[in-house]
Structure formats: C-alpha cells, structure tokens
Length: 195
Image 1 (cartoon, rainbow, N blue to C red):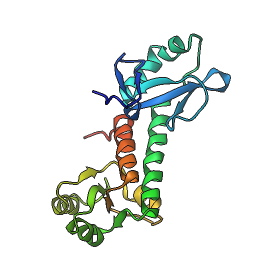
Image 2: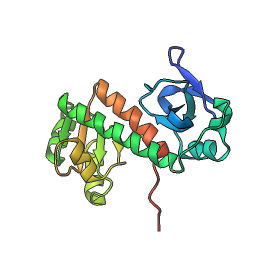
Image 3: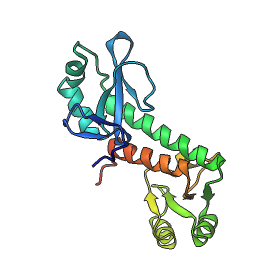
Image 4: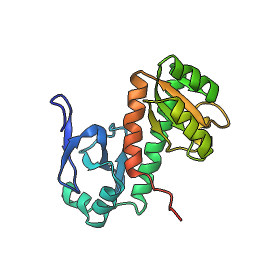
C-alpha cells in the first residue's frame, strides 16, 4: 500500500496502482516511438508500467502504448532489454556517487571493518565472485541488505577500479536511492538461465 505522501500511477499492463518508485515511465518520443524515461524527466505525457520485465513485454505485445497514447506508436523490439540496461546504468552511477560521498567500503577487509562499526546497511557482492567467499562475507555482515545483481567489472568500473567483489554501503540518502534503483532493475533484468 502506498503512503499518503507518495505519488502513484496506474500500470498500463496490470491496471494496478503503485508508487512511481517501483515503476518505469515511458513517453512517446520523436517519430512516434516509445522511449523509456527511467529518470522521469523527459517532456510529454507519461505512460507507466510496473518495473517488471513481463509488464513491459505484455504492454508491447498487446499494443497498450498505442491505446494509452490514443494514436499508433512504434515500440522498439528490444524495449525490455533497453530498460534493463538503463536501470543498470542508474544503479552503477548511484554507486559511484555513493563512493564520492564516502559511503562505501571496498574489499573484504574494509567491508568487515565497516560492518564491525555497525555502519554497513547494504552489502554488494559480485555475482561472479566465489560462492564460498560471498557466503562468508554475507555471514560477517548480518542484517545488511544483500545485492548481487552486478559482476565484478561493473562494480569496479562504478568505483573507479578495474574490479570489485565486496562493497559495503553505509546509511545515507544515496544508499536509499541505490536500493530503490536496484529493486527496479531487479524486476526488469534478464535472469541468467539455470542449466
């Protein structure tokens, strides 16, 4: 249930109403093409979908963007993948801002030290890191939200390094923004296929 002070919109695909923090905005751009507006800043009437891959695919398949826009619009074939990449970039950009704000601890030893001081509220573990080492770190940083949606090179690039496997985030406004963006990305990203 949304809070009274939250802005809400109706999802084109499900008809459900949600806070905009868990949705993705689209607009009809030049040449009547649907454009993802993950930052919510583009001009034009917003067309909203829940931040879930199946909602984007349903809206495209059932021509819901055209119905909502009251005119024919072109939907890019790879719209869900485009949204996923845009949300991933927002997550990593926010992580970079958190580093510059002094909210990050990078590397196993620094994350453990941050956790021992009670400051770690989010633990970021590289998806391609060693499972055993990841499990040890999760056990060492109890109570923190665990994010494992990015690989070591993506995390490293966001932090100005070649790679990073373990990152702790202290409490702060950017940490809250990061978690919000990760939740949207998690709903839209393509999951690796399990053999």
